[in-house]
Length: 97
Image: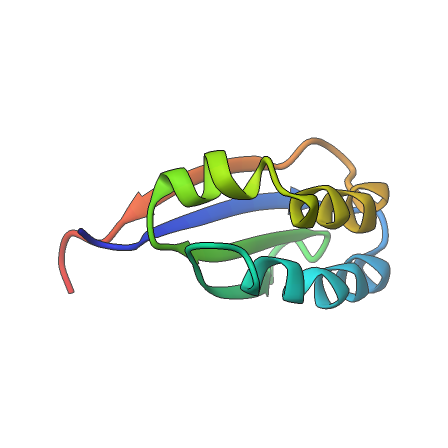
C-alpha cells in the first residue's frame, strides 16, 4: 500500500504568523501515528496561499486517528487564527514513481 499525501491548500491573512504556527505545530504532526513527513510550500504566484503536504501511512491515520487527537486540536489552535478561508484538503497516492 502506497503512502497517502494530504494536500491542504490554505489562504492566510498573515504569512509570517502562519509560518511560525506551522513550525510550532510540526512536532504534533510528526508525533502522530502514521505521519511520515510534513512540508509547507508557499505558492509563488499567490504568496498568501500555502500548500501543507503531509505524508501519511494511510488515509485513516489522517482522517480518523490524527483528527481525533490532541495534536490536531493544538495544530488548529495555532494555525486557524491565520486562515483567510477554510483550508481545502485533498488526498493523493502515487501511481507512477
